[in-house]
Image 1: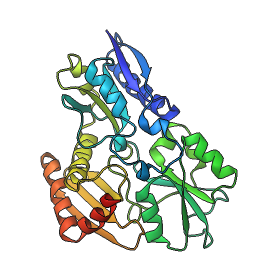
Image 2 (image 1 turned 180 degrees about the vertical axis):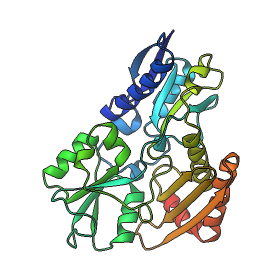
Image 3 (image 1 turned 90 degrees about the horizontal axis):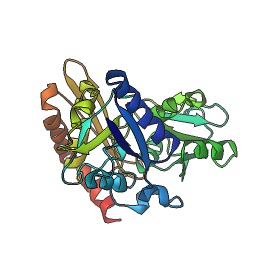
Length: 304
């Protein structure tokens, strides 16, 4: 059987598709695959901050539309790019084992975030990361940084920034983790919802869904369900300052935070519960954040 994968054309996206293929071939060597590269809105607009572009699904919409039309068998996405509401008829069929969720600092001079001189420039395309940096050190300057992984590292080397922040998972998958100066501490730098996880999206009635379900990593799926329920209850997209750290063992522990864009406010909650209640845990965490004032922060952001 031949399956067609819908994917972006970036090196990271292709690498993630290759990871999914390798997991499937290991179980089903009779399968064959073809990649169909699809350019998304986020790929086409490279000269503006993501938060300013707005909208949901900037890096997945066109690919998921191809899935819905039957032009590709399934899509492979970075989970943090996937909006909480999918196109009708589609679902996240599986989540392979999640990679490390930390954000990573890459510093031009090898300095950790506590060692950077006052006024140092940090590059990131994420409103969440900007808020977290300013919450942690208000004396640093955060500037927008767009482009693929290689482009961002090149801009750092050229001296356009003193340091940049990216997801550790992407750097590891690209074999570029040698550049990492520091894993940013999770208690201060909450990752994006779904960070480090891969989403495999297909039609709900996809005939070969059983193949995809076989590579699902249960603990990673439960964590993602909780985090996405949190995000949906807060009405958030992927470009808002909401972060979460989820630990899954015998039980599920969800730590979540909302930051004001200027970093001056940080609202946190922690919830613990059964794995089967992952979605309810996410919803409850969101309601607790709202009770503590998170909705006031988010309303201001959504107005912009």
